[in-house]
Length: 289
Image (cartoon, rainbow, N blue to C red; front, top):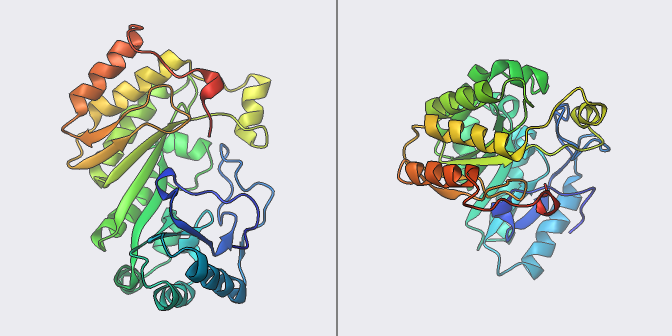
């Protein structure tokens, strides 16, 4: 496979075929994300994409899931995405799930008919970074979306039958709006009711503007205890039905995974035990993005 740069994929796609169709992120302005700062967004040449599909046909016959990388494959024109899906089905007929990252802008760029056709062509799972339900936080991190625009995009994803996996970033406000961020994020997620919520914890990167603020002291990171308090508030305010909740990312202090609402009180009890020192937390040395 002919990869350019560092290919990022969700943890749940670890065993998937990773087919890189774009390089970088079409937005690439978020203050916290350093994944693609050294890359200009580009669409890969179709001959290269097809060569990689042929490679997968020869060497990836035991993998029945495929992830379209990089940061926002959904931004591709519909005709190109449809062509890619046709070639995946033609050359990789055993693949039964195709997933990709998307942002609200790329969902807005697709018509209802196009989304419906992408679903019927085999696109099954869409990962979308909500990050926060607090408009002030979304503005501060330069998401260039509002809670309303994110909600509308997520509703369209669910309406057209895709599995929607969302992410929330704990600690992304620093000490300024931690509880507000947790409460408003829960409120937004309740309105969306995604199939999956993944919570990860903000860790500064030196090549980002937010990382530079951490280094110069203008942004104060939350302590492990404050992260737990934010996580508890988020979970306490969630009322989603039949939603998988995961806070088991490598960046988190306390691994949690289960389903809402079934495991809600168990989550809260576990966090309370951690706050009392009865459950150990992951060392900073072992945390990673």
